[in-house]
Length: 161
Image 1 (cartoon, one colour):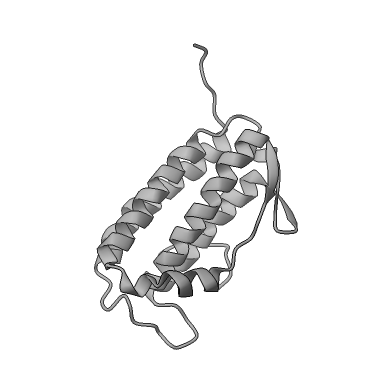
Image 2 (cartoon, helix red, strand yellow):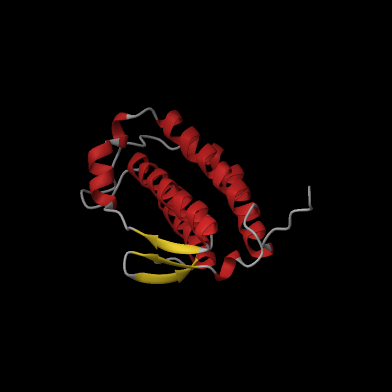
C-alpha cells in the first residue's frame, strides 16, 4: 500500500480544532444555568451547543462528500428551526458537551485526512460558491464565535460579533 499524503492546510485546521476542544471542555462544564437565555432574542448556552452540533453534522457531510466528489452542491439549513425543534434545553448539559466535543474530535480527524489539492475543491452551499478550505476555516471561526458567547472572549476570531 502506498504512502498517503494530506493537505497541510487542513491538517493545521485539524490541530487548531483539537486544541480548542481540549481547552474549552472543562470551561463548558462549569457554566452555571446553561439553559438560561441571556435575553429572549438570544440562545442559551445549551441552545448554542445544540446549534454547534447541527453545524458539525452539516459540515461533516460537506467535508466528506466534498472530498469524495472533489466539490459539490450542499443545502443550507434553518438554524432557528433546528434549535426550536430539537429543544436542547431539555437535554442534560454533560450529554450535549460530550456529543459536541467528541463529534468535533472526529471532524478534526476527518479534516486531517483531506488529500492534497482538496483546499481548491469548489463547493456550493445554498447559492454561494466556496472553496472546501474556506468552508473548513469558516467552520472553526463560527465555532470559536459561539464558544465566546458562552465563556466570554476566549478566542480571537474573524467571525462576526
